[in-house]
Image (cartoon, rainbow, N blue to C red):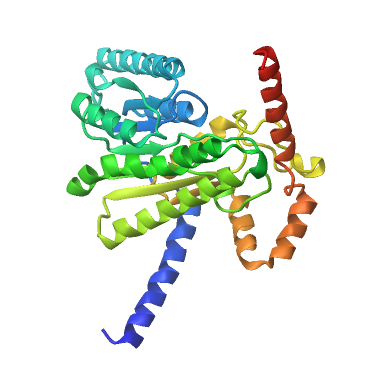
Amino acid sequence: MNIVVEFFVVTFKVLWAFVLAAARWLVRPKEKSVAGQVCLITGAGSGLGRLFALEFARRRALLVLWDINTQSNEETAGMVRHIYRDLEAADAAALQAGNGEEEILPPCNLQVFTYTCDVGKRENVYLTAERVRKEVGEVSVLVNNAGVVSGHHLLECPDELIERTMMVNCHAHFWTTKAFLPTMLEINHGHIVTVASSLGLFSTAGVEDYCASKFGVVGFHESLSHELKAAEKDGIKTTLVCPYLVDTGMFRGCRIRKEIESFLPPLKPDYCVKQAMKAILTDQPMICTPRLMYIVTFMKSILPFEAVVCMYRFLGADKCMYPFIAQRKQATNNNEAKNGI
């Protein structure tokens, strides 16, 4: 094709992409079904991971829950089983009432499986993934959610904690994806969800290891998405989730300027996950919550660095992590005192 003609074709496709994106704002796409599909969630024992598990359970997915904490993972599984029992009771009532119009999954299809796995250890991931394939089947939806934060300034952070942050928040995405992507490629079907952070799009002071890990995983996700497109595997979807500060306790104490905080409070975990689920079930490539994060990311990309610094200082975002770090340091000192260290 002549390059001039191709240029106009590409221009039309770009403009059409804008039209389709605008249409999604006006007319919400229909959500796809994940009923009966195997959905694996890392970090499912608490926080967003637990809420993702409950949301997928309500949509009748078969759940595989990974977490390093066995007890909390089993607690999540118990909540999932409770949802499954409610669904089975509703199905039974519908059948008894003679309502045969809706497709009702057999009770045996609603199952949850738990595995204790440290996703920061490559061999542990691969071994656990092999168990999942043998005991459950192939994974259709992979939600890479597990994450940690050290809570130390760079020069005060032990090297092993920096390595741990990078392993769990970034490298683990490589291991889990390598474990489950091959089958997705074979059948051209699947969905990979990367739970990152707004701190993977722009940064702040005091959490260098966390920001680096999240920037890394955003880059990994974007490159993977392009690779799937280049391979013309359109049946495999990807969704990047970048929420603002979420009130899960992970960054307890983090504060921006008090006059601004009422307009930009920490996100409620339920709201964050529900927004992410809408994006996942409509095959939306990326979701930033709240939408203001899109604007912040765009401004950071076009403004001079000193202008960004001025904005950070005005918002109180330049040192917003300092109270959190101070609390973590105090908690560490208290634990050492209790243990007689």
